[in-house]
Image (tube, rainbow, N blue to C red; front, top):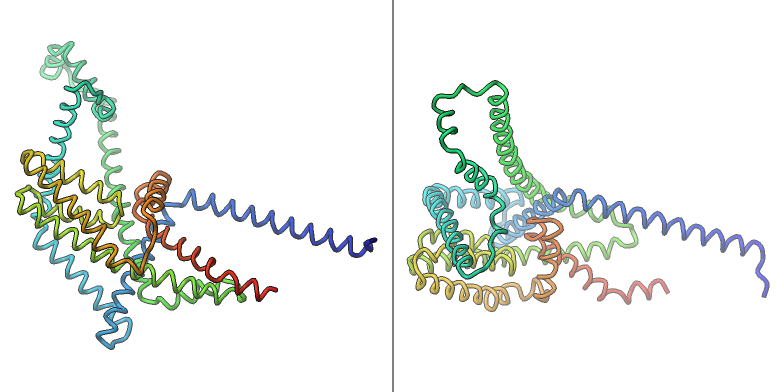
Amino acid sequence: MTVSKDEQLKTRSDLAWAIAVGGIGVVLFSAALVFTWYFATTLLLIFAGMLLGVGLNALTNALGRRVHLPHAARLAIVCIVLAALFAGVAYLGGATIAEQASVLSNTIKSQISHVRSFLENHGIDTSVFDLGNATTAASSSSGDTAPAPASNQNSHGPLPNAGALASSGGAIVSQTFKLLFGAISAVGNIFIVLFLGLAFAAQPGVYHDGLLFLAPAKHRLRATLIIDRIGETLERWLIAQIIVMIAVGIVTWIGLALIGIPGSFILGIQAGLLAFIPTVGAIIAGVVVVLASLASGWVPALSALILFLGVHAMESYVLTPLLQRQALDIPPATLFAFQILLGVVFGIWGLALALPLVAIAKVMIDHFKTYEAPPLAEAA
């Protein structure tokens, strides 16, 4: 069977076009991966703002089922109520939180020292924890060799020269600016998340339609289904997660107060906040609770451990299945693996936002698995 020259040219042209499109797709995909890698923190910060917007919008819609007001008025009411709650907690419990946080920090440091001493007495090497004390140890060992000349120099020796003063002043200024920029960065990130959350919640329809506009016209219906499904899933998950966090914080606080553990209020707050991070957050909260309880004796520490296990069982086997059975259905091993992966690659942001990211991926996979047959039929 012979093929005409025109058909050969058309086949070559189609092949060249397919290769060109595939190459462009590979380049664009690689560029997107590089961009995501280098700007992962910024992208996760924007995603956190979107999550806040989804949560505010969910609360606004929930209020709309009770009160028939415009969306902007309902959002303003939600923001005012939340701001009043945070301000009330800061006003009534601010001094208590600061005091208990200071006591808790000293207690945990002391208990870590006791744990290290216990491990060293049983022949376990703990030198890996001495990274921050290397300079102190070196200075103390050098000071033991010649204490008298150093004392005489401080008391009767000449004043430091200009170079030493400039070096000391430069170090102080450098540390000051480092702390200042760190504080500005943390506060700036908080304001970025708040601004993005308020902007998304104020006009959810604008951003919804904007995402749909980016999709090709023939796939716009599918994009609408995916976006709506993702929004509903995240809204249900966020509301359920807030309820779980409040319940874990209150139960931990009351339980530790009844046991007699100092700093029970701040421990309850940190347990509630860490409940936002599945599995890993509960482990961190449990370790902190047990370390803080060791200062009160073995019996309170054992009681605190039993309380932590009970709270974790309540969260894992009662609250989460009851509140999130219609929101998320992700196997624990899969979620934990993605948490470790995103935590190692992207740090604390990846660890904290692993669950909503996995939830979005699962919604998209489920959609394409469910609606795979109709597009194939249409194409045929």
